[in-house]
Structures are given as C-alpha cells and as structure tokens.
Image 1 (cartoon, one colour):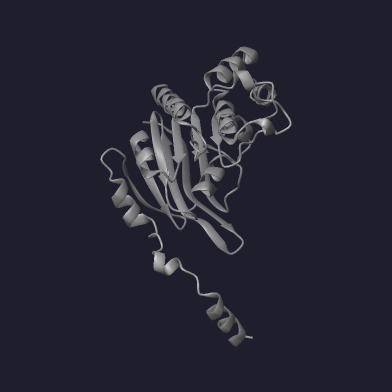
Image 2 (cartoon, rainbow, N blue to C red):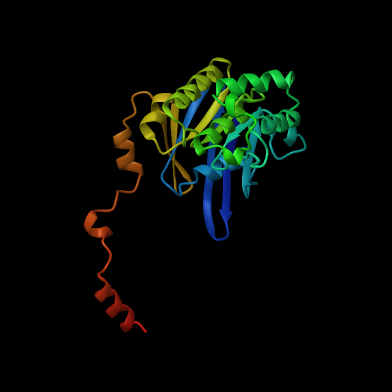
Length: 256
C-alpha cells in the first residue's frame, strides 16, 4: 500500500515541556488509523503538526513523498481535511457562508451544489442561514465535519470528531469514513473512546508522554487491556478527598 502521509521522527516542545519525542507514523491508502493515548500524550500536537498548523522542532512530514513544510505546502494542505478541538468556523457567518468561504479557498467545482448537498446530508439545511454562534455545539460539529469533507480530501485528520454528535450524526460520520476508505483515502482518528475507535479503525497506535509505545491491528484488540496498560488509573475515592478545612488551616499556618 502507498503512504499518503508520513511523519518521520517528529519532535515538538512547548517551552521546556516536550510534547512529541521522535514520533514516526504513516497513513496508507485505504486505511483508518486510531490514535489513542491519555490526556497529555501528544495526540493533538501530532495532528496539528500533520495538518501544518504547528511546525515541528525536528523531523519531517511527507505528503505523497513531498515535504509538507516545503514550497508546495499550500497544494499539499489542500489534500487534507481537518476536524480539531476548534471548529475553524466563523461565528458571525452563517453555516452556508462558512462553507462558501472554504469552497472558494479550495476552488471547489460546482460549489453551490456541493454545499447544498452537504448541508442536507449533515442535517443543517434548515439552519443554513443562521450564524454559527446561534447553533448548538453538536450542530457546529456537524458543520465542521461538512467543512472537512467539502473538497473531498484524500487524507482526514480528526481529533475527537464525535464530540457533541448525536447517534444519527455519529453514524453519518462512520459511513463517510467507510466511503473514504473505499476510495483509497486515509484517516487518523484521535479519540478517548477506545472501544469505538477500535471498532472503526484498521489499526491503532498508542502515544504516551510524546512517544509511540504500541501499534497493532485494531480488530481483536481488547479495550480494557489497552486502558489498563497505557492509561493512568482513576484516583480512588479515598485519594481524591481533600483535607478538612481545619487541617488545611493548620497546615497553611504552619508553613508561613
């Protein structure tokens, strides 16, 4: 299979804090890859580097063998679709205006027809003339997904794409990803829902403290075992109790 996008030894720090410590990963044509890991593992930073929103401190990102941060970066970015923690939507514009703006950036052919189809598919046609700020979080996420699929990208980078979605929209996303796979595209899907991600993906990779620590086929993987091995345990009720106000006052007084 052909690698559509590849990360080679990516490193990224924010001040003294390393977020990625030499991560290598590739997405091949026709596969969905689940990106797992606890909070702070580096998932969002990795996706932002792959999307060229953040420049890594070291390493390379290759899209079909070309350097993403080279002279052809705009052309290569157009081959990707992104859904992140931020919707990348303009609050003061309507749903339709947002899609029209992005359609002009990506030079989408027959843009009006394409926008109408997506608004209807994602259940937004009846709210298409309302500003984004008037839409619920779930509807904004639907619109962000419509934006990501607008130019039919061959690579999708998704960071918690199901956040705020109802079951119907979640099923729509799954069908869309299945269609992407059939067309020979690829997606990297970061999520805290281990079981749902494994059910959707062809393989998974696990990040911990900025390092890739596990990678395996998703079918047959045990969500409970992955959680036990790679995620910090939940605090016990006793450990989570705070000190009493009296004890806290005494400790605070003693330290002054």
